[in-house]
Length: 443
Image (cartoon, rainbow, N blue to C red; front, top):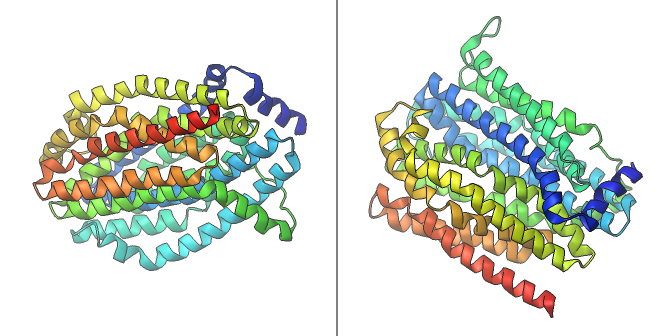
């Protein structure tokens, strides 16, 4: 294991940056592509079942983002800390940190599951008004939240693999999990063969099964021994030191979606549905950014720890350039084919009409989003969580929510302009911080 770890992490020290990214990124992107396809297929089947069930998925989507924030955010802390220990040739500490991460994930899941069971209905009532949609959302939400143990464990074990440059096993795990979900969706939703029709509850159960399948695969090679109990707290502090920014970034993402849903609910449930559909489709087109975010964290962390600042700069330069080129595809699709995208999921005239207006406006924000999304990851990877958190809070709370609310006073059509405005503002501020950091390194 040590020889394998040494070989994989030495690539971070010596290999050319584009070659490293080309080696690491494709497996991550493929896995996330399949995950995005799962989201699309999941929404497609649920949309075919009923419009209220589709609204329920949009309402619960922020809670699923909280699961990602807690699970993956803790995993990012494990990933970053392990990469630094490998850079300093301290593999024993890296392994013990991985064991600590598993304990933290289980404890977090227990707390989250208990809170979800207790407060699901009050939460749903903030974003849905139609009684049938409320009932479906409560059912779906309780199942996916209480049954999220697989997502939490996979969040840790995946990052353990990635800290050593192993992107293939996580890719296989996420692929199997997504395919499991896709296969079970129509069987459980509509009831095929001996399986009874479960409706929206079936979609939730399929999601849980997929997460457990992915966790079981990453467990091989991802499970690590626990440190002594007196060391566990020390490791936990280090993990959250590197991971808290990622957790809060994702949590803020959830908060602003909840608030935007509440604002849109004042217009109609269809407006809430359109926002939910946008985030499902956005995930598909943002795959290169999310894949590169995953890949550059251990790479930046490793080279920063070894004071190879020129490699950190080169990593970000290549990341920005590649992301901008690929994001042009998303701009074209959202600007020129909004109706076709919405019709994949809904035949509602109101939903289509709102989406026809919203999607082109939001799509214009994709290029500036490269800088507002990638720059916080840079600061997170080099251990400057304060700047990373500031940029994320600025994007999701200080900019988007006030602008969205202010424009909503003019009418539903104008609210969507909040997206490009916010991305431009945060992208510019992020680049200013980044340039200052580069100048300090040169000094």
